Length: 352
Image 1 (tube, rainbow, N blue to C red):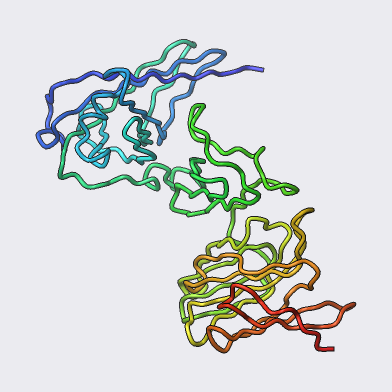
Image 2 (image 1 turned 90 degrees about the horizontal axis):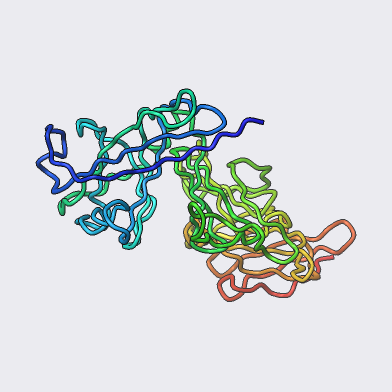
């Protein structure tokens, strides 16, 4: 099997502005970044629309970008990238800026490859910095352009174990985290998520997509509404159903189903989604209630309990008065009354 190892090295040197570009005479400083491709075991083909990761560090000298970190006038918001002659701005994304390190993704129109192995022809770009009045122009969707073939891009830099991952492209395919996949470690070549750290009895995974089998729908206006169904995801629309985005209601999706959703006619943003299922060992529960206070945009678990049956329907006539019904073919039907503004629900009462 042929193996290909690729290394990019950046050599940064301070240079005087010799040609007038959009940032020349405006910015205090610029540096030239030289990217030299090298390959073993085969050649590296030239690439177009290539997202180059550029890192700067506050220590280690100018060769590691300490002058850029120190010279940035606005915590990285003033950073700009251009082609080698400074004439054409390049799209970029500022992934992070901590004061001690920074990470930028820069879209290169082309990057040279190698021929006959070894080292290829360098590709150069410029980085400009040192303008107090500069506003932020970072754009992840311009770097990871869907027209260039990017469908979804995730930096895996979530700050917490349950954090979702945002899609860097304009598609906005959020990767919804389930089973506590672990916060992003700071070691390695970049941020990552740890799937060996997860909720006991459950799996760690991300769900990506905007479709599911739905059982219930409630529109709070002509444009905004929520659909619920298999899995602990609510589907949220702000354009009358033309497009939908996923909204998580529980960290343990695979054990739950949402069967109905209702919102208060008194305060339309107060909504409840009900259903049930079975959690893994140690977290057994069969009924489940989630609440939203912003019309379905965000949700939080409100009630779950073992030994009761799944909810299949809910109706609300005020902020403090909702009734959920459930049961199955082998047990009596029951209903539960909303209590404590949804923080808890009354003990199920049999109806027959």
